[in-house]
Image (cartoon, rainbow, N blue to C red; front, side):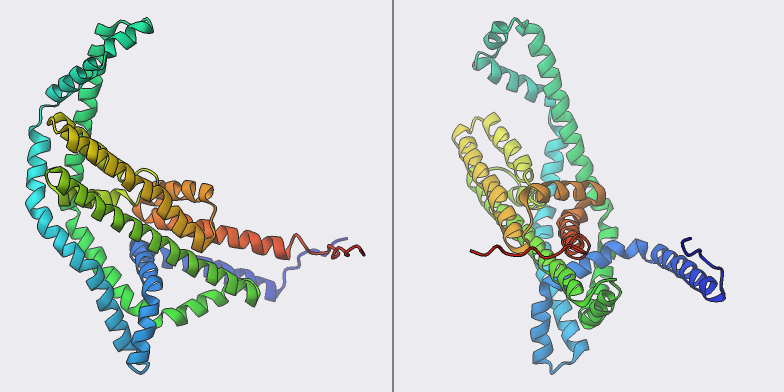
Length: 367
């Protein structure tokens, strides 16, 4: 018979220990859960800027507190100075955008768009398919007006929500700053301890840590660099084309560019349509061509930067990024590729350790 589990003093202590450990970890998680997003952001930023922190450690003679303070200050300046410039300009442009969205008569806009469609013999095209053009035009015009109204309402809600959540954003920025200092100061020591908890051999622990580090750096660098380039190029295009509130729209492109394979298109297409509505046909066509070039940058630059460094397949990278956005919100854009890379690393370890156990090494055939 197989060995049966015996109730001994040692076994009782082992079971009680793991029950207490699970309970304490659950309580600890409940206490830290409100700050998990701040910790994740701080971890990402620390890993990206850690080479700079290493230089500060060298320059300060290994004074960890001073080096951590300087590194945190540089990161905050890197993030806050552009944000300060954007906020100043948004203060000028947001009232204009709000007034435009709230005062626009979308029924008139939809009627104008239908007239444009009629100029391209839209009704004749419908009749060739046996569809009543008059009734279809009425239905389509109502649908266009509803879509434009819903888009306007959504934009107004986002603008209003941004101001309402300003206090929460400032609080999270403080938490991230606080975590940044301690992660810079104690991050290497904490990383070593966390790695030692992995139930893997040394070489496999190193592989997991290396994969995590490379992926975080590649993902953050690719996403921010791509979004920054798209935002700058879009802002220049809006200025040249004469679109109102170009800085606000450029910021929207920067934010939308974080959504892979979609982002910037959601901003420059409505802007080009607006120019077309204002009878600035040449500017509309030029902006559409420029916008297509910006979207091409997103389709090429981001996957190339992430995939070339992190060695992630483009197919799974796309779906894990979209899935991360849906599950974790904005932070999921970064977590999706990271989880994908770690999953691939653990699968590789599983294949190396478990699938090859007991299998004899194949002998080479003699020539």
